[in-house]
Length: 244
Length: 244
DNA sequence: GAATGTTTCAAACGATCGTTTGAAACATTC
DNA sequence: GAATGTTTCAAACGATCGTTTGAAACATTC
Image 1 (cartoon, rainbow over the protein chains, first blue to last red):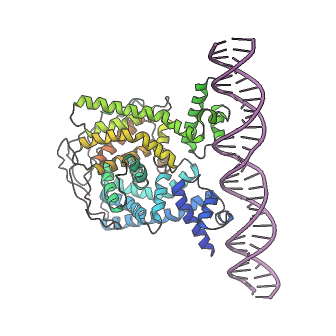
Image 2: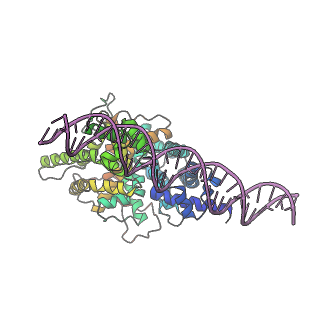
Image 3: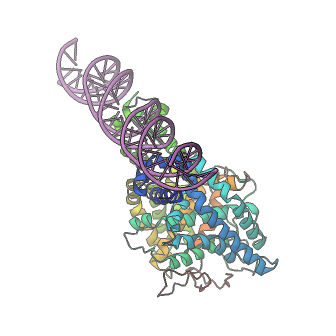
């Protein structure tokens, strides 16, 4: 068994066990048992459990974000300076992720389920590690969105990006929970269908009318009825009446 | 120290520690230390750590879902049989939740951050416990949405509901992660602003054009460009061109 | 082929976990 | 106010955790 073989076996076993049971509940003995390697191998090859967790993410996150940037580069080169359509940007960011999530054989499927819920992970070192790896990519996509939707304030872009991440997270990892509530009537086996479903939803949310944010907000009260129609779309005029 | 006092101190301490560190990482010694009660008090009053976790949820989830149903009842009584507007339904479901999340003094704030990420919790007993408590409420709201958006298939409603839950989860628990990426430029202190932001996004997503789902989908391939425009809105005709 | 470096292995380390115990303290009942 | 029931307390239980150890096995170097 070569060095890399042992390393890979540990990484693969860790990944699938983390998806199934989480970081804390998964013990090194479970991991080394599944990987069929000696218990001490984890500390020998990775140094610690914490470093192993980071390596599980580093391995896949690099490729995911590289693909995202490559796709964005391609689109921007094609557009030759013109702003991209929102749907193109979302497809580059979320499409690449869902494609990885759908790739059962490459092993990316399990990883994406793990990634989805890790943004809300309580453990500080994981969250900040993840955010650090993503910062550059998010910057590029945020800029593209700002260019694509010039009427939308930067802060609003950030928030909607964040909301979209949440929707994607649940889309990937959530069919289990959804099915308990839906009493088994949900089928998430078809990743293409899930992709088109999610993309419609995300586009609708991203291009929703801007909320009217009163400049001097009384922070305690919530006024659900106050809302103003604003045009969010840059490539055409939206004159649709609002149905709030 | 009365019985209920000890119980309450344990529940409150658990809740805030669970938010901060998660279920598995929080030890009973941390909890009883923070609550200033004896270690054995947890097993005496709750039976086990698992039962304590369930009680933390039971305590607040009941009230949350009761309020949601009460609000829906009120709206439906007002409408007198007519279908509600999608925005009304969302406000009853998500508005009540965000109101609880914004209520710093009542302690609901911490709980909602916890709840948001618990739907993707790996531990089976937590997920199924949660789904069981929510099933009745989700049923009622799903029915209201189906009535409100008769053109939308039931399965699509389920998925969009699920996506919205994800967005809400990130909205409530996610400003930390968002701020690392956004380099501290995000302010989530104003809950009213967050509410209007999220509601715009959710409504946009819920009323997005239906995706065209090819009846015989090749489950491996993803075709991001195939998409059809469909009218989702029930209360008026949407003739907006699509900008995909 | 001896020497050196790398990887594996079984066993043990100290620490911490959730839970249990039995006595003491306290409250309630009659 | 004795008896009974409830709650608190310090201490210990066995189990499991991540990590370390030192020898053995294996691979590579010269």
